[in-house]
Image (cartoon, rainbow, N blue to C red):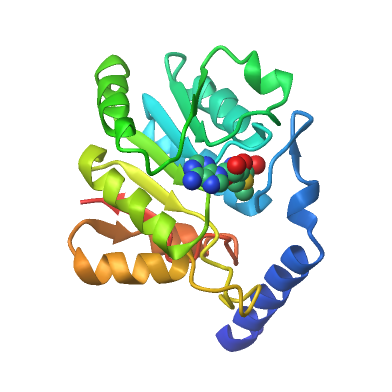
Length: 218
Ligand SMILES: C[S@@+](CC[C@H](N)C(=O)[O-])C[C@H]1O[C@@H](n2cnc3c(N)ncnc32)[C@H](O)[C@@H]1O
């Protein structure tokens, strides 16, 4: 039996191996690139099954692999689910995501204030909890702007994942600069009662690209 310290080191080493060798850049979902930890994706599938969201909101579309994953998985759980995927540019989106019946693309910044009314309207059309995932511009300032926007649209029980807090040395890409990890620390210091951290979920598969970023709205 190994002790917890050596378990933690093994997970961190695997995290670094997976990240530094760009394994995540080779991940595909139904043939569409999806820049994620596959362990995180399995966690998202389990969260969706428990949450049964009527709406999934993704910030950062890129090729559309993650939007497609959320749509196909979400529709297997609730056939009326919609996926709103926001990006400043949708030029790279694959046809499979463009043709998906549940994916709606919004081409704008994920800090665009007009998204508040759009998401509120979609909430009315798609009743139930909402699953949000932040995977766009990873700078601290931008993630803080996204979290400020979510304050206006989230409700108790919604699930929010803030991805890529692993950069800037947590434990990958040391020296990247302040990003999601630091944004989350600042946000939680200012609004400590907004979210509960789902630490068991984060720890389930040993490592995550979203450290401190599995959040349930209080
Ligand atoms: C890491 S990629 C998203 C990957 C995708 N979610 C996946 O898992 O495959 C980040 C995306 O964020 C977009 N982006 C950058 N700045 C943004 C902003 N201010 N608002 C919305 N999207 C932005 C980029 O255009 C890029 O497509």
